Image 1 (cartoon, rainbow, N blue to C red):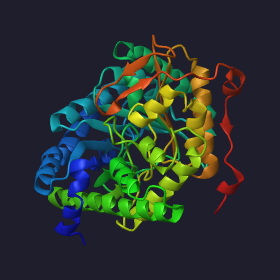
Image 2: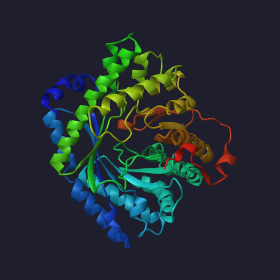
Image 3: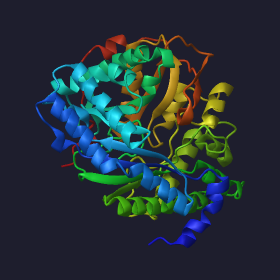
Length: 454
């Protein structure tokens, strides 16, 4: 299926164009860890994750060394903890204890993040769901490697506006709990509409209940590779442009397929999916925004940006699905602000606003991602931003998400440094007009008419 000649073809991409496998993510089911005794649940969770993941990091490093392919992150996703802790957790603090156990085992096996401190509440909240959500500020302030995600809506069920309102408050509270670290907790918290069960990328990764007991998912990347390829066809028509992106995405995805199969075989764990998303980093030359500029825009955010991003996203998918039989996750182009130097430059130049980013999310892989806003932004305003983004996902039958960071003590004109892959970001202005009465109505926004397909 894959031979070393294909790997050799990518050497220049790896050495000069920032090609990497962004993450090997091991998904682990914790359904058999459920117990009514909290201490037993904690022990069960630690033991099972350690059993499956103890060799994950070493295996990733061995594959890196053997094939010369950088694998940036080794991660774990688990079954949504609201399900696992429901029988044992009686208070939000009980759920925080489970988060601490996840953090401890993540450190023990050496992964950089563990995802799945999650709840799925698109239609309603159980008492356990609500307790987990209310535990998030404490949990993320007491842990280093735990990531949290909440699914608030879907095309089939509509949008749970009670949960949207609550999450606006929780995001603000998380920002306060971690204010000494520039509200870093919010960078590990994302809300979704139509969340996929097999996403290997943080902070949204969790192991869906329809998945096997343990699987390997791989997320590839390569914005720099695509940009370099497009430099060679500068000024050519759209047909040539699209063919170039497709061929490049094919090569990048083949690398991910190779790594996924190797990791699966060596760990004795089934291969799940390859997520072929273009995931940028703060490194120069590893930017989705720079690809948009190479397509012909002065800055990301200029007129034509949404069309260029739609083209890019579609051609990446078309090229990638030919390279692997099991493409999944999010797959397309990510547009996080703090993690993409080109996006940061566009914001600083005044070319890119929150509203333009929202329009771009109609055609990208996810949504409003890693956006820093003033710390005094109201919780209802954050909820309104979330509701807008979820509505795009619900109506368009796609995954959308919000990872927004109200940085306490910072305002428009300031910058915030998160470090590492999380990068840095300018504080972006937010519409000042109120949506309080809209958010405070309560209840659910119904599913759209095209959701009824049975």
